[in-house]
Image (cartoon, rainbow, N blue to C red; front, top):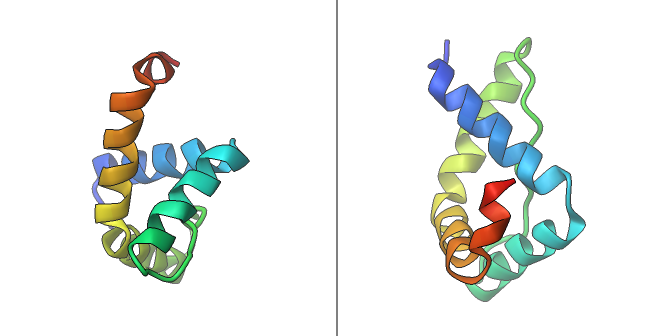
Length: 83
């Protein structure tokens, strides 16, 4: 079973991108610039182990992209974090 903190983090990251096509485009552009395959953060499902495994792998694969995305967000749009 995954720690609750990880599940919560994954849910928040998924929600952040799933609610905005603009955010998703920025995330995809960072992937493109890094020469990485363009992928999304999969929706978490608590009832399927294979789904959770896929989510863990994807977050691990995209961790540096996520860090860059959120660092840019903090730097360029700090007011958006208040939401």
